[in-house]
Figure 1 (cartoon, one colour):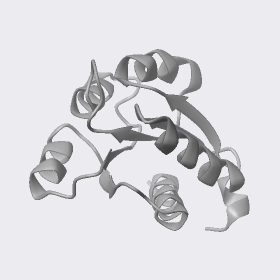
Figure 2 (figure 1 turned 60 degrees about the vertical axis):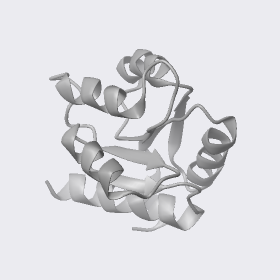
Figure 3 (figure 1 turned 90 degrees about the vertical axis):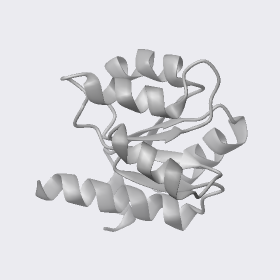
Figure 4 (figure 1 turned 180 degrees about the vertical axis):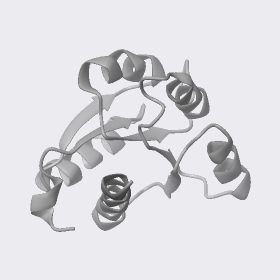
Length: 132
């Protein structure tokens, strides 16, 4: 998938770190992706209805509503359960990956991510959704 194919793709990034949100926003925005950012799960849930993203990157460790709880709430909603969720974490443990799968995440991306790993994840998920 080339950069031009990403235009029109909407991606939400949920992370309590301003640095991570800003990095993702820059990396994705430069490639033509429309980026919606949220500081935590509550902020994200309010914005999902307004923006209906094609893909959600969700940090695991956040205050108030963590990434597992946020993902589970998204997946329980008949309207939003088909939105792919990729868990973000600074830990690369088997337990975290398994727990993410249990709540419905599609994939797991370790922070700090690179521009290439972020865009590759977007491309693979968007391509898979287009084929389905």
